[in-house]
Amino acid sequence: YLEQKRAIFPRFYFVSNAAILIILSQGSDPLQMQPYYEKVFDSVNQVEHDKSDKGKILAIKNISGSDEERVKLAKVCLASGSIEVWLGKLVIEMQKTLKALCETAAAQCAEMSLGDFVDANCAQFALLGIQFNWTAQCQEALEKAKQNKAIVQDTNRQQLVVLQELSSWCLNDLKTKMNRRKIETLVTIHVHQRDVFEDLARLHRS
Image (cartoon, rainbow, N blue to C red; front, side, top):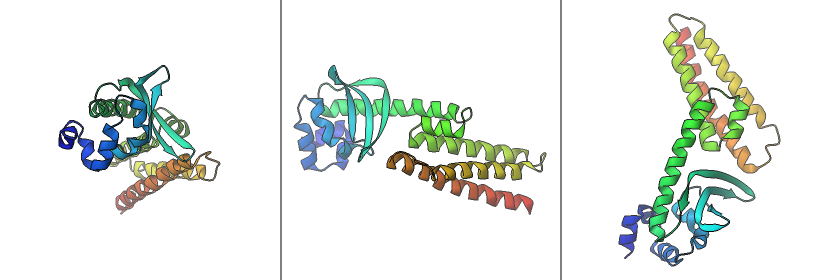
């Protein structure tokens, strides 16, 4: 019985038999699934239902203490029928939503200021945008290095400016622990990125 359910919703393979039985016992009320999302999804603690129709899932949430990160689904997911079936539909809607957000972040990161871009996106896509920019700058510098002797050092300085701006935010009131963790993650990753390009710049000088 449980193997059949796991075949339909493979994430059940990472959940204990006892937990699956509890989830399956929730019957046709999708609201009863709320305490169990974190057992089947990483960084999703709850979902947001339409207040007038509990069978419609509007968004996914990551909750840590009093902090909350909310991602609105690109399309409403209908929580009807067997739990393992509509959980599979929810996975598909999550994937479509994240793909759309990724495309948006890829466009925004080159157009918006760093602060506005980071504020407008959840941690995953704020980080992705910074990595897009770093990759584009590195590629341009390496491609044009023979024609423009100064571009590698100029790019190295640009990346230092980004790191200094990110680091300066850590001295401010970031409102929530979740937002502080987001900014500190961006700083940590960009320190590594900057070090990598600084090594390239040193090789270019030599």
